[in-house]
Length: 435
Image 1: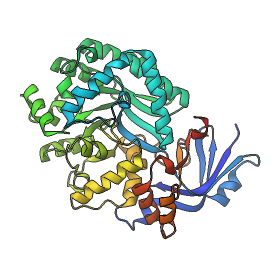
Image 2: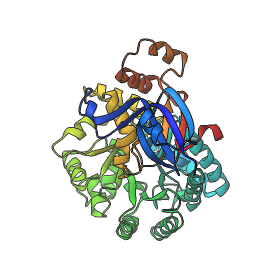
Image 3: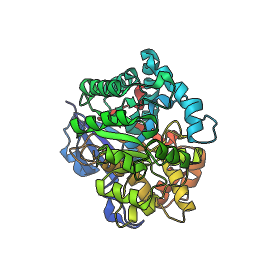
Image 4: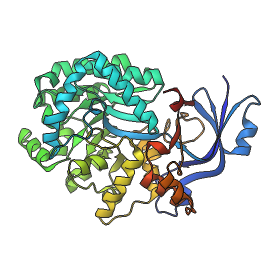
């Protein structure tokens, strides 16, 4: 297999930055090289040293002066909601009932699901996202389309057939047994095929009866290594309604705990309004709170206390995500731009190194996949993105007075979007050029 040597400015993280001057938390090479073979990074470091390791006939690609980072990771979004994005509604529950549920009913049709899957993956690649965690619809056809397209493109993706048996249109309901059987079928057909990961996916407690939650618990026991994804404490009305449906639970988080769904591979979208008891329970279980800033602002759900949850005596693990289509951008750069603003409103600071950590290694750690993705370390998947901080005239003008890596990252976060993505590599292959 031919080797590929990619040259550029390399940035990857070793751990979460503790402060803006925590240079030990990341590795930066002003003139760096990545040596790729068989979809894997086999060497990374100063260009000269990596060039010396490469075969004489290695293909060389020069991306200077641009930044090369690990592929961006999105830990929560809804694949069937591409045509829901930008829908006008007052709040979460109105938005779901008016726009989202009717749209998701269309995914019973395999042809429609396949078409949207193609567009979905095009957008991921265009925005530099190489791994995402998605909700499909309740229909097995939607999960089949999602994973088939991931396999075709060689991407490491996580996703699941949604389970929901109440409080939605008839065309979006399964039954406890059907949800269990079809999830098992998706696992059998897709999990571990290529780079696919299947997630057990009850939409949220409002749309699952206790009988279905029991079936979800059974799946979690039978497949303890799978991710689990659902929603938690996004909106005050949602929290109130959930409490009415599960009156025996201490609180919203306790519902999931009672069914064995609170663990280190559990991804809970939103988690804006957690009580101290709930945050403690999540911390003790190692569960992940997934921050979806553009969605939280768009639906008026609230301000996620990212910094406060991270620094508490019992810290909560954090992921960040676009939450398309409640979210308003496919870009992880724009996502962290809004995350920054939310922390500003809370009187907190989120420095650019933290932001880029979150969308790379941080999200890989949240998914328990940092041995594969989120870094540029030798032996990991060759998923990486090339970013241009002078991609637009306005950005280029600002770059004229940008003097540090810190400033450049903050510019990318503040003004960047898909236009800043020069190239996206998946398993060592340049992807934008083939779309």
